[in-house]
Length: 58
Image (cartoon, rainbow, N blue to C red):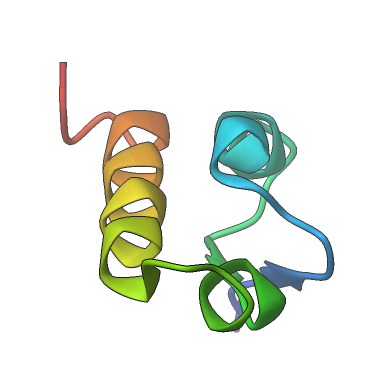
């Protein structure tokens, strides 16, 4: 069967739409939430970007 592809490596919220558009089912991030002053906000940004890219949000 088909396996979902999850992209990882230097992905910022602003690029999630492009990554999903290229066929990724999702993104995995480390530094994008680990090395920032407000990790909670960063996680929200990624969730919002992924929801938008997948068509879940306007």
